[in-house]
View (cartoon, rainbow, N blue to C red):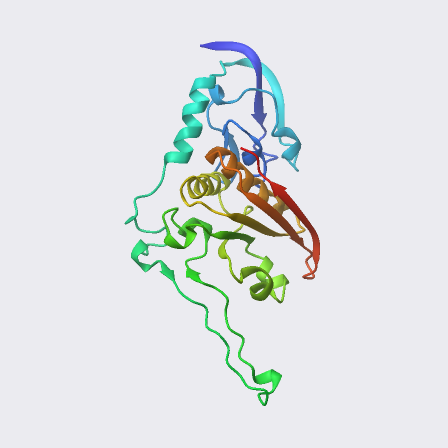
Length: 253
């Protein structure tokens, strides 16, 4: 039934598909489709406009029009479906690789003596598993169980020279880009991980650029959907590889 009420309108010509509006919508009413933010269904939008302040292009506004009535029960079902939609354990990954190729391994230990010149000391990788891309890691991956999770924007290892030693060591790493990848599948993936993997902590490392700031929000949204309270640290790096800020949060369910 259509009623006259306030609802979100997204101006497609202004939208650049950054996805920052997606995690700000508690009802899951917005998703990125073909590079543009779209309203999933009118009944999911409460018209309160929590997404307005997240849009850097000013592409979202509230209008009062004849629209489908807001349906709180439908929203609950919609959010529940985002959490429970998980791939089977033997499902092929997005790259076409079977999940049997998921690997966990012990990082090698460098063994040198005092006579070895510093320039000749091998630098060992601290990576403990494969794959690392958010889109490719199934929520059932064994290396996620009880993990201290490192969620990194994919530009960060190139900017920060000691990324392995200072961030990856001792953590399970997931890498992605909230600007170039679809936001809603990220939220669904993290919700599924947090709901099933008993993650102990999360460190989110992002660049100072605006498009990176959506990644911690996506992680928080995943926690909210999963109903989990997990310690979260956010580290912001400059484009010159300096640590600009560290924020610690204790998420409350």
